View 1 (tube, rainbow, N blue to C red):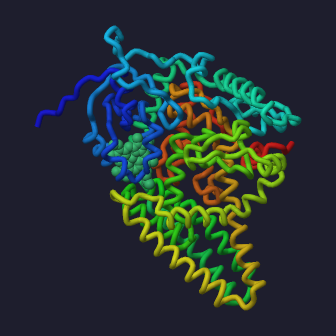
View 2 (view 1 turned 90 degrees about the horizontal axis):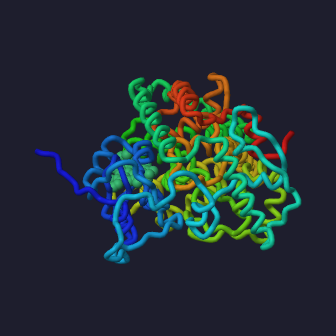
View 3 (view 1 turned 30 degrees about the horizontal axis):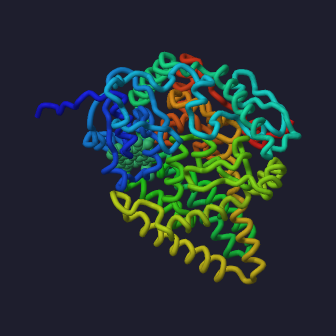
Length: 534
Ligand code: HEM
């Protein structure tokens, strides 16, 4: 059968479709209209919404299987010529003109009516109502220098006396501009040619990753993980039997800490690469064994991967009123993920003032917050109700009933003699996995939260907003792949045990295109995240 041809579409025509409410993005020079598919999309609609009006080729390639990519061809409606100049998606505040608004004398072409050369002040002027450039909030609190070789996006200035009340707004805005300027200075220019070159080298890198077979999962590595899990579970069980309740709880906590890593791999389809198989693995580990919802996690995490470290869009850095990792959160931003305003109220003012002390304490109770979010997700049916993932919710609910039967009834109620023992067991088992929360925060909290505009390429943004942790290979099991967060963000479906090999290729890529690669020791990374050591 002759391949189907598609009409060439101008940028203005695409704009008109988006103004009419269509979910349109660019993929491999084709215009994709995803409206009909969105209700069935396992990745949810928000991930797609953040790509509207953009060339989503690299994001889509990173997050999908070859079969899903193939499936997208069905939604082609046209093609575009040359380098696509990204719009700011409507969900991020972009404004679009309906085609009807064009008068007879107006030229409709694919020209760059969006600035493409740099995030200049005129670019700022055309942006959504809230300012969008910034750096970390600890910039408000203390002064430190980034280690040599690392972007000064992460370096911080001092202004501990700042009170960002209404009168502080202009200060916050000027800080935003200042931090953005720093990023623009330290990272390659976001002009069209430079970014196109980075994209082209990134695609070559991806080809090298495939040529070196780095997507192939070595199941033996997971057999070793499985052996570790069984060892931790049996040790916990034996100590429970012997009446060593605290020790038993600690081993159970250690098991949960380790299990999260494999749930993360499965959530990204990074084990078998089969959507259903990896989903079931994820549900068994997260829901049946851990009492958490992998569906909630995926919904949250998918958005995090497409808008990493954007204060108003990325749920992974939205922890108001308890913590703020960007000064922009000190102005009651509206979260597009949660669809509500993250108030900078009296509670937030107090909590954020002491966040460098409360940080680790809050992390100790991170798991309790995950229960809350998981239940809300399952009870309110926030997951996909149609499409290939419709049944996940029911399996997850079964998983939660199973979890509370073995843990709530079997361990806490039946095996422990007193309420005090129950309380201590619960506390220890839930605090011991705390390092996983620190490991998750570590990758992003100290990195830039600036928005350099719609023309920054996917690879540059991932490298600017994410850091890796240096550790010896024998400690990889403890970090569970999260130490290679940069590599993971560039290629989320690569199996965890291949990330160390991929790191070398990424370092060469960074050297070639001149993007700093943020690599810290575990302690230094923590100092940066917490922000006031040293
Ligand atoms: C018509 C367009 C699209 C189609 C047909 C489509 C299809 C799919 C399919 C079949 C999956 C299941 C996993 C797989 O087999 O790879 C999936 C997952 C996913 N998609 Fe899309 N997709 C589209 C657009 C997008 C866009 C624009 C984004 C944003 C970058 C996106 C983000 C995701 C994410 C994050 C997942 C992972 C979901 C999970 O495993 O829970 N998709 N998509």
